[in-house]
Image (spheres, one colour):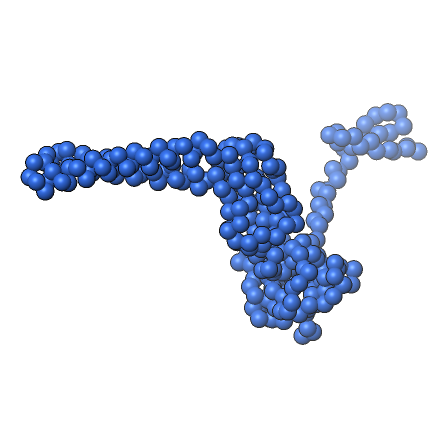
Length: 266
């Protein structure tokens, strides 16, 4: 009676061996291994099956330094409210102020020369070349004043809209480089909702569709309405992002709050 056994090693074909150690014909190679594919992720839901929703600000921005220099006014902290036009940051600007004053003085001198050439022109004792040169110099000096004024204006950063500070990245009297982040700001009076739903819902889910939102942070329910859908369906998960707005008071609500969305049965 012969005893057969199989040896399978990585990269070596398996063979049958007799008791006397002689090798027989190779055993057939195993078939290809079937790869397992993960199922597409479903829309995020809470433990009760509701669609997850998040409150976001429709208008938000990171304010960067328009110039390099030392901050001399940085009045707002994280969470502070501000109004459009309020000074968010001011830089030390003595050099820019001096350049503006010099440019204005040069413009005044060039205008005086042009006025003299205009009077000589009226008296008929003028040179066309000198008059044209004086006019060109006035234009150049005017441009220099505009450039110097822009540099001075860059020393002050004003709020582009009313809202709230959501993050601080600098401090007063700190020296920053151009483009360095200073503040994160947002409009906390214009909020919207973001949620991801199954793409087959597009058959009935359209702008104007009502739904309700339960926010975890407040423990309250809020009426809401779909306002628009994303321009692209995620093909793997077969989901799409949709946006909604709250229909009612939003006092006390902050961007980043989350909860669940419930839609009327169909």
